[in-house]
Amino acid sequence: MTYLLFILPALALSLYAQFKIKSTFEKYSQVRSQRGITGREAAATILRRNQMGSIAIEAVAGSLSDHYDPQAHAVRLSETVYGSNSLAAIGVAAHESGHAIQHHQRYGLLELRHSIVPVSNFASSASFPILFLGFILRSPSLILGGIILFSLVVLFHVVTLPVEINASQRAVAELSSAGLVSNDEIPMIKQVLGAAALTYLAATISAVSNLLYYLLIFTGGNDD
Image (cartoon, rainbow, N blue to C red):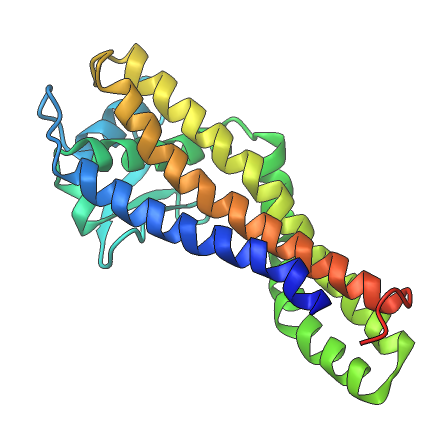
């Protein structure tokens, strides 16, 4: 019951966030940009305005698979974003361009996130088996080791959230200053990006909730 009290609110938020991003993206995928530009064109304009015209803009398969690859120096847009002139597509493309700008300007939190990715990936795969084994064997040292590893996963989520919010803020500012969208379209772009940010908030809250529960067990606060 204690675990449910910790996790259910985070799970409910996660489910709502997934619903919100899908429904918002679908809604504004039906709203065409007044300027008629595509996601690729929006990304290209933003990058060019920031002296980053050499950054590749590539189409990739999948839905909502958009991302910036810092190693390849490429903005990768899903097929539903790359050639679409919807407000949803433009917002997503601008957001990924925001990550490219962060990388180019060596934005501190993005640099931190990149530095902890390898450790976080290892911790994500190793923490749960170690915690499970620690609970089965009733080994405080194993449980503590699992908690420390999981703390690194939480750190990754905590750092990721402001990075994503900052990329969205950059996206809105770039779209507005470049005249790629009208003042009437800005609130709709913000809704798309806000829904996306909610998924990162939900992931962070879920990770923190799990960590607090593990700490509660370790400190003897739960007798279940």
